[in-house]
Picture 1 (cartoon, rainbow, N blue to C red):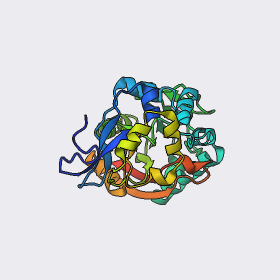
Picture 2: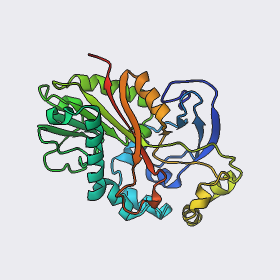
Picture 3: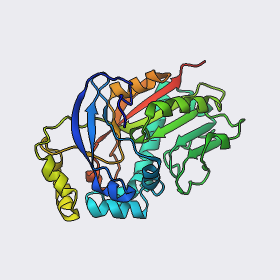
Picture 4: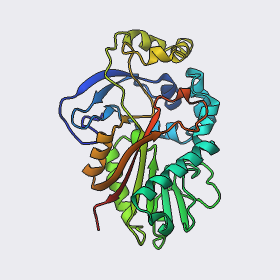
Length: 312
């Protein structure tokens, strides 16, 4: 169980809610726990839950992430999560192109020479590598990935930093849609910095982070018992899932699934600066742009940060 804010480490008293763990996740991962405590940190405004997923739960959740079994179970409980949405998130050409162009634009705005000089990129948890930009002078493009996703042409999958040759300098490290899933984001950030510096390229090394924007507000939870009952029966939960108005009501509990923390600009900056990064830019963007059937997405904006280490 997590007792301190995963972003800033604060133990200050915070606003809390009882939250419900999504039944599709419980079926997929065999998780027994049905509820968790949701907290909004008063120090940095991070929304987070106290549950910490075991290695077994994480393996069942992410080893076949968005593959057939994952989609079948999730869609069976929540029809709003459609096949079109599932496929578009990983393989939608327009969606991936939009993200690649956005990354390029953001970095050009911070360092106009970076793109022409960059030789190596690593995308943490990047699947098949569809978000890695295709810059002209890149020699090394890696996805650090534990799933069996087939990498795109010109991209190599590694399962650890040690598999990247020591003389292959890495200029850009990407972690898109990772931080919100982690049990220990502060530990991840420190380990990432250590590993990245060992493969630093000839210029300054940049880190690109991307998370969903915003956090659920504390709710009255007057209908917690009713929704808890719905979560035990697929038919009732499917009807509940189809009501967008009810799901966002102050009367019903927050649903927790893959995301264990929910970020704002303040909480993302707190995580970065608190683990030794220098922040160059934090901004939001339209994360559902070019995404097919986005009504199953609970967040309409993405939050990105561009940073480097304070180590010279």
